[in-house]
Length: 167
Image 1 (cartoon, rainbow, N blue to C red):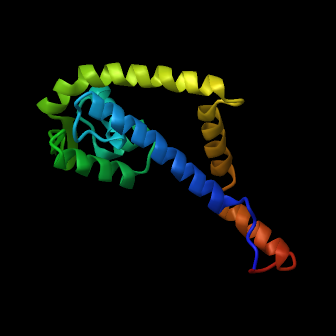
Image 2 (cartoon, rainbow, N blue to C red; image 1 turned 45 degrees about the horizontal axis):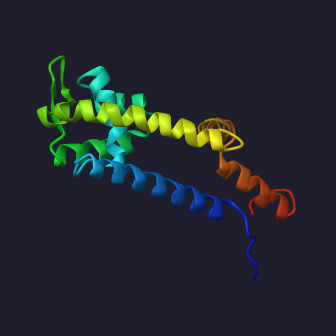
């Protein structure tokens, strides 16, 4: 059996590797800045809370552009690491709101400087590329929202199985 040298498995592997490299580099920057325990995955949620103030997990997910589950996991880690507190929403006791702790607020000036420098560095990186990676990612997400990969795979499998029915 031979496997193609390209395809979603390789693409997914390369994308995960790229994310690992980027996260590793940012984690190293955090370590250089003395931000021990601050993880790259925290940045978007902390930034959203710094801008909006207390917010529900759903509101954080929407602001950051991730699933509710992903935001919930990040908030749980932020709580565990003492960067976020959860408290009942005064207007709806069934909802809990996340808010930055004093410890997280004290980190904001350093984080703001790092976020600015990282955005500038990412811009410089994109100038080296033939096509801006951020644009490619957005256009890919839009294309997948219009026509999910699962549907595309099923269509191709149906074509190989004779054009109809279940592969």
